[in-house]
Amino acid sequence: MQTQSFLPPMDTIYIEGLKTQAIIGIYEWERENKQPLIFDIDMDTPITLAAQSDDINDTVNYKQVCDEVIELVEKACHELLETLCERICDHILTNHPAVQLIRLKVSKPQAVPETDTVGLKITRQRKT
Image (cartoon, rainbow, N blue to C red; front, top):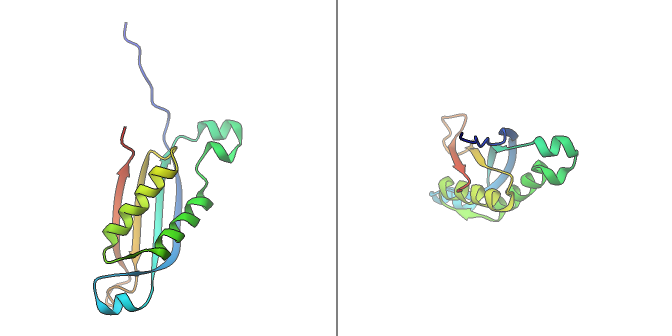
């Protein structure tokens, strides 16, 4: 008889509309002044233990993640959103072991004047 191994259920802790500013872009005008960036971050993590313990240490502290992302972005000076997004995902996966998967969306509303916004969406998963 085979024993079945069950994965804990995955839940999503999310952050929507996190606003910060950065020097980012490939054009000279983008390198001269900070531009607004808006982040949506979904972090898949099992919350069962936190729901039972009612202890913030058993889950992902979204305020802490917000503060860390803002600090990373404001200190960064990348040309590409791709580089910045990879670094953010790597930071979250490294520093928040409960997070199993991240879906990150960044909007750069001032990049193309003819649009409301442009940006990037990436998904990164913890390596097992």
